[in-house]
Image (cartoon, rainbow, N blue to C red; front, top):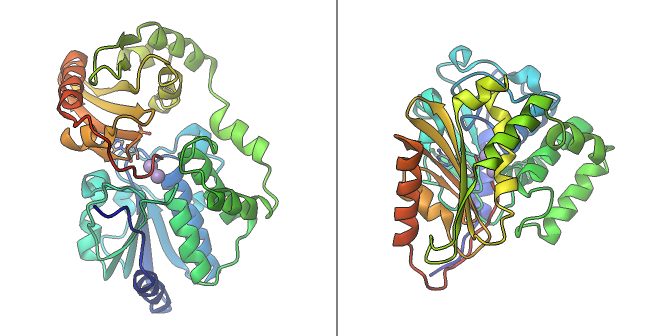
Length: 348
Ligand code: AMP
Ligand code: MN
Ligand code: MN
């Protein structure tokens, strides 16, 4: 079986031509996945700021679902490009999609792909379904921002501090601050180029990763206290999981974004290869985050349950009760082959 392959020189040339061939008053619509994370927003806004430098004047950036940028990402440059999905142009000359592995991640913005002149997809998920017209999908890239920077470089756009901050936040988000496997020499080289524009990494990390309301810290206590360990699950590799309800958020007066770092506390459990946090989004609907230390391909579990992701970080939308969702995960883990598997990237 072939390993993951990135864009070919032809793919890059086609993408560059699509942008350079835009009419002077061409409309460019940038979209990213629902509940945008640092990579989705950072690759989109960093690329958008780059297009501004190329002289593109008619541009919107948006994402489906609730129009709310998580508090830790509100300082990210380029937010002046953002409009709520309902205000996004119904059609544009070019639509560029960031960090979305499948059409299901685009919600009500999906129709823009068909209605726009050209649809360019920038992504790094091995599970990318190759929707859209032009694909710059690199499963070896640590983040979609790596692909975005590759395209900006080919367009001759110099990195400035605002572009660099967006791309840096994206890169640190998806590499777990340079801790995950796909933190290659090239990732550090890109980080060095981004930092050399004048970024202050300590200040950015504090804002993005290390600042949460006191109520969130108390909420973490409740949620972590109910964590369960199932050593026999996943063919003996072990499963550790917990859940957070809307009532938990309400009790501590918190927004859902505060739940995102919980998976990092749960996944450090030594006795389990697989970790999950099941986060309630509606009465019988849950956003599930899954991680693996490397022996289990959690993207297979997520894809089987209607989601997607990477070998070591994946997710899906679960239905029913918490127990229904965890039972479905256990079932899919039991169905996984136990032999040696080929590794893709492991970022988010
Ligand atoms: P998260 O746990 O939200 O950080 O997501 C980890 C990875 O799983 C990311 O690469 C996401 O793109 C992917 N992912 C999470 N939720 C979904 C979903 N509902 N559908 C498809 N992919 C998802
Ligand atoms: Mn993402
Ligand atoms: Mn990503």
